[in-house]
Picture (cartoon, rainbow, N blue to C red):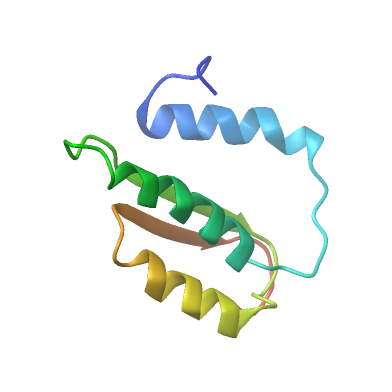
Length: 94
């Protein structure tokens, strides 16, 4: 992703570049990716200076399949230097 500019423009460009190469399907499990990014954020807290903050943007076309696990992952991540943004696209009942 280093080829993309920083900020919202970089997010949009990265999304546009990835979209033709992905296939949407279920189940829609969020807890694995939340826990994965949370591990990076937890490692960042071990540094002497607080210099990293993580923003996880999840763009989904499906309803969360692992709601209990996702809820637990979000609660655990709330103690870390990270934010989670979930955007639903399509006609699902978000």
